[in-house]
Length: 211
Ligand code: BEZ
Image 1 (cartoon, rainbow, N blue to C red):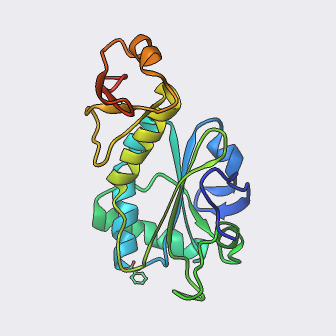
Image 2: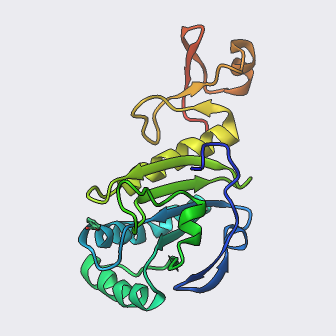
């Protein structure tokens, strides 16, 4: 069965390009992104891992550990990292799991047999410090993901966790956020000293609290 929002992300041990790894130990008390790609030495995957490597500092700033996965071997991963670094002008600094027996892929539902019996699809999970799944996305092999969007969602999730606010459609860093329905307008006025804009009793905006 596939993992759903709010489920506990299962722990696992895996062989990676950075050595043997225990997932929970790797995450520590922070956030995590676990994402699969169909295969090494393929064009879209090369650009995806390149873009992720370019954003390594952005993930680190948000206390997010990144971990990639495919069902290819460690030797293949290590050779391919050289190509990614060369062609995308980056240094891949996050581990890639060599999930040859598909044990992690199966635990996380990353193989969609009607898309491919053998390869993982483009699954991505954001995992919170409580080890619960906060975001799942699934893309087909032919479409590279937008890792800026992943960061945008992480920013939204962290705002919710830290300030009890939600983010509206198409929200971008620095824009107004939404007071969650669980907070009364009376409490919101005290909680958000930058002010509240009440459009409707259920639609209340406030400036981004951490800006
Ligand atoms: C790619 O990464 O380019 C790719 C991988 C598997 C199938 C199609 C495209």
